[in-house]
Length: 197
Image (cartoon, rainbow, N blue to C red; front, side):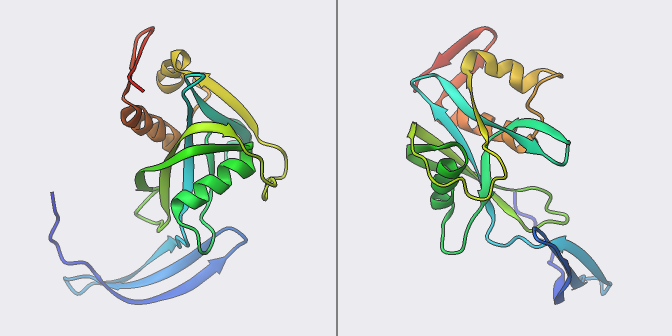
């Protein structure tokens, strides 16, 4: 389904404010009906990756547990980080996996590219599936403390995805699991796991 409405004309882009992590831009727009206005957005930079590691030997996804200031607690999630200058998403995924939780993988595969909130963010997030998991330690990057690694077996994944009191609350992680299960041809059924991987 393609939408054919004319895009607004971008008359100018200016920096409103910048912090260590974020840059807010003002975008002056003129819509096809002649209305002019300014929208603000978080600039996207090079984008970011989230790595969904699947360990077929353990029949487990490898999660992280790290402190998240937004919820003010330690949360279950996946390896994630920004794409550095000169890197593509798969290279960034490989580096982040090794830096954050000391793992490597034989294969990195792009599952999907998403946007957090297209109404006010330009950041693209690349969801990357990592398989053939092995140990591979790099320097810990920019983390203030070691990130814990947690293996969640397929039998426990359904509760993690669907339970109201689940430890997994991050929407992009849930999306990543669903896309990874499809790519791996794994079907979750109540108390029964069917795997063709």
